[in-house]
Image (cartoon, rainbow, N blue to C red; front, side, top):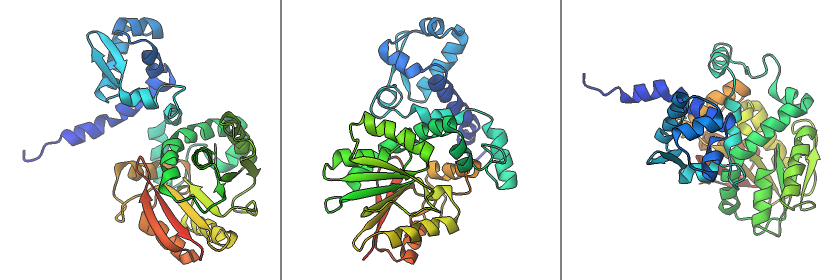
Length: 331
C-alpha cells in the first residue's frame, strides 16, 4: 500500500464530529455548564441525566475536537469553546448548530438528485419565512451567530471615514450594521428585510442601545425600492442564496441606487478561482443546495458581476473565518 487512507477515515467519521458538537450545544448547553463548573464524567452524567458511558463518549469526543480539555478526572472548556460556545459571551455562535438538527443526509441526497432545496419540502425557504414568524426568528438568530465574527472584522476592513449611512440589504439580525455603527460613531444604518425579520433585528438594535441610529425598513429586495438616503450598500451572505440572474439584478439595482462616489460591499465566504477550496465555502455550497437556489462564489465571479454593473475600483480583502469583502465604487 503506497498511500495512507487516514484522511478517508477522518472524512468517514466527520459527520459524528458535527453531530456530537450539535448535541452537546443544542441538547445540553455543555460548554456553558463546564465554563461555570468543570466536571468529571460521572458528575456530568448525573447533571445531564445520561449514562456514564454516554457522557464519557461525548466529553472525550469534544476533547478530541479541541473543544474541551481534561485535567485529572475533570473536563474544562478550552479558549476556543469558552469564547464562542458559552451562552452570553459577545461572540457566542452556538445557535448555528440548531440548523444541523434533522435528517441532513436524506435531505441532501434529495437535493443532489433533484437540484432543488429541501429544507421545507416543496416550499421556498423565503416564502416560508414570510409566513412563519417562529421559523424566521429561529433562522435569523442562527444567522446572527454566523455573521457576528466576520462582521466585527468587516468594521475594520473597509474605510468608512467618508461614509454617512449604510443600507444592509437582506440585513437579517443587523449583525453587520450594528457592529459597524458601534465601531464608527459618525455612521447610521438601515436594515432592509422582510417584516418578520425586521422584528427580530429591532430586538438586537434595542439591546445594543442603537435605537434611532440603526433603523429597519421592511420590503422585498427584488420587488420594492431600496430605502433612500444611504451611500454604502452591504450585501452580506446574500448572493449565495440566489441564482446568477438574481445576483446580477441585485448588484445592478444597487448601482442604480447609489449616489456617485457611493460604495458596495459584498461579504461572502469566497471560493478560490477554481472553486475547489477552502473547505468551508466548498461545503457551504452543499448547504446552499439544501436551503436555496444559490451557491458559494469566487472573488473573481463577484468582481465580474460588479464590473458588469458599472462599478470601479474593485477590491477583495479578507475579513475573518474564510470570509472576505468584495468592494466597488460608483464613479
